[in-house]
Amino acid sequence: MRRLDSEMDNFRRREEAAAHARAEILRLAQAQRTALATSFTDLLGDGGPSDETADEMIRAIREWRDTPSNRSLD
Image 1 (cartoon, rainbow, N blue to C red):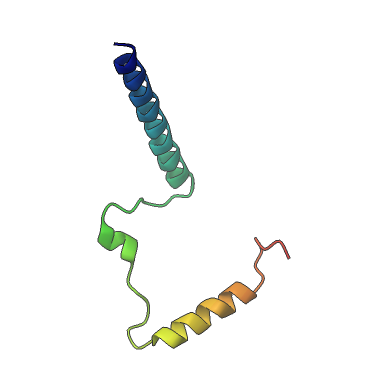
Image 2 (cartoon, rainbow, N blue to C red):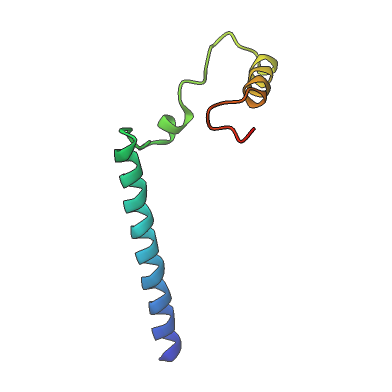
């Protein structure tokens, strides 16, 4: 019986943590005035320019990484 009580307590704690995380994510999305992705297709996005090769995409990403931004620690 103790084991079952312990497992139920663990389950409740995980559920509470998950609910807290969901609420925090929604709060952040609202603060940033953005919508959450609701499907896998939303997460994929548009994929970028259709005529861009993989090498061009990799080159662009490397350039972006090397470019300091306002959020940069450099």
